[in-house]
Image 1: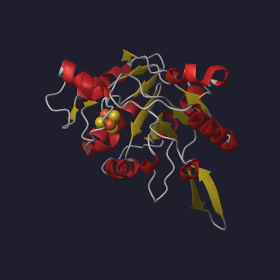
Image 2: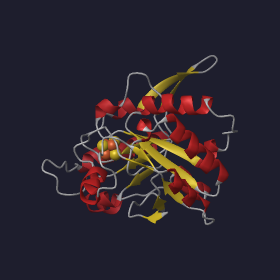
Image 3: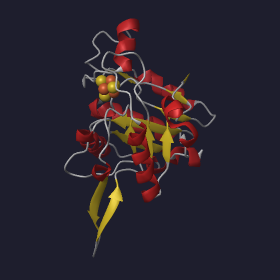
Image 4: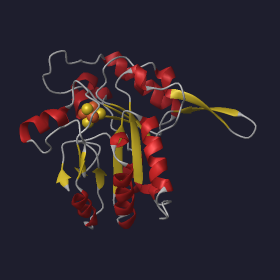
Length: 239
Ligand code: SF4
């Protein structure tokens, strides 16, 4: 598994490379243009042999899709991932998607096509919803394991990060995830968005109100000064 500068995990391991979403700021696509890992970035490719890297014994937090969006994986790739994670519960596995609804469908198809006991994944596998802009939050609210506001591209309307769930005899308000990661756009892209401090302050107030951790990436250290914060994320508690 590869060491990384990403500060909320120990390493990365990408068994899928490529993504059809076409985000303007995509660092992974730029890297692929340089190194040509896959011929066509818009056609994700699966490299199953890379899942063997999970067999290493020292517990790590592993970001499994810095080179793809997990919602665009094929069902059988997700099944292979599930199996590799179950066989190696010493690690914590983290994934991201910008289309959480599509991911839920792919996950459901994968769950239905395997007879394995997947219950351990609740403790070792964390999928975050990336909300770089307000319109990433859908009308149908689904909670994710965490909210990834990275790179923050505009002031986030925090009311969009709250939903309502029915229980037996009541309706509860809940946050869209059990933690928040927030980071600024890096690189020198033309049109790069530089965040305002009050955008981040607003997210801090939201996190404190809901008593969930907030983790600021290094890209915000200078902007936030003494208020820079890196609370423990759910997978950091468990390793
Ligand atoms: S979703 Fe992620 S991997 Fe896909 S194009 Fe956007 S930034 Fe790149």
